[in-house]
Image (cartoon, rainbow, N blue to C red; front, side, top):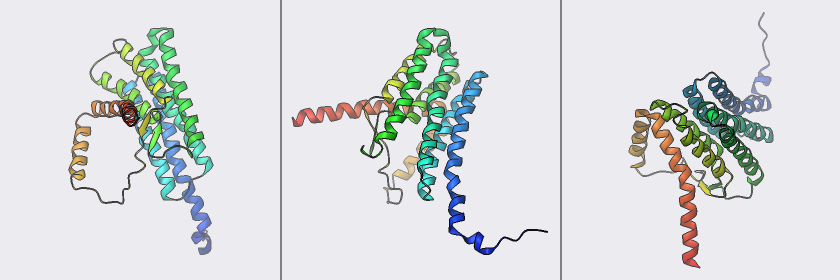
Amino acid sequence: MPVIRPRKALMDPELRRRGIYILPNLFTTASLFSGFYAIVQAMNGLFEYSAVAIFIAMVLDGLDGRVARLTHTQSAFGAEYDSLSDMVSFGAAPSLVVYEWALKGMGKLGWIAAFIYCAGAALRLARFNTNIDVVDKRYFQGLPSPAAAALVAGLVWVLLDLGYTGYEARWYACVLTIFAGVTMVSNLPYWSGKDINLRRSVPFMVVPAMGLGYILLSSYPPGVLFALFLVYALSGYVLFAWRWLKRRKTA
């Protein structure tokens, strides 16, 4: 005989709040799984799957915070869980993937480069958690770990697509891995995009520009994604130089 639940229990806002509360953590868990999947596939030699999994983890990581804000389910637990998930998906996973693919045959230099990236991601996340209430929300301090992970994974993906082996690309991978790790712990400013108001009207030209972006992305995803995050990684240096020149002129 089916159990009939009281109508009051179904409409209880506290029960509904608890049901929604798990939603952002599901996205965080999915992001964590993507990072773990990237590591497993790298151990199996399927590096293209690993690179794609890191990009999927980046998308899921962007969704969990937005879902939490939309459903008003932010919590200290969710923030800590998200940070630990980011360490796996954007710290350990990219460093292990690029090490297994290209850096493994370089001896000490290979694992040192991979460790520099992994340590940079850990320090970047720790600094972000401690400075979240005191920094300018419009800019990140140092390259965000998801962007650094996308930069490393994008290099692996695009060079695999072009037919390069890990041995042939080992020096490119080494330099880029160290560059991403050091840039994460730098004080360079990176635009966060948090000042974008999606409810505000935009010029009409934004719509065709977005359509063009989707066309470019669908035409060659590895190259477009890698170029996009490479430009973003370099934008911090450009913005820092522009601010320095501006201060020098005013002085």
